[in-house]
Image (cartoon, rainbow, N blue to C red; front, top):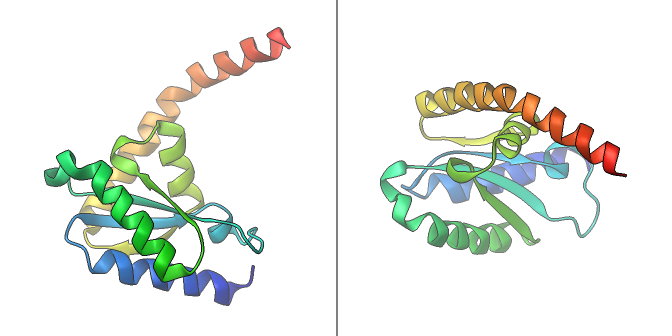
Length: 136
């Protein structure tokens, strides 16, 4: 994937997210952000929603899936960072390109918490991997 393709995807995501009041910030991540996607690849998006809309998180995710798929002209996958596992939060943040930032303060606060949770989770993940390797 070329840089122009990444910019096109990021710009399309930014337009969708900026039009919403329930999204505080969002990333394009995965192969669409790292340049590894191929024809037919889906686009991975991670959004942090305003906690005031918590009761609607599932519905908002479905709305965003539809909007992104229509806007991008390809399949999309949307992760709600508020409820995502620590590893997925970390990957979205580490690999991701910030497509929209309605609240810089919320994004920085999220990133600090996500890093702390991820590194707190590392010993558990290492233990799991070791046990999995023993069982194979």
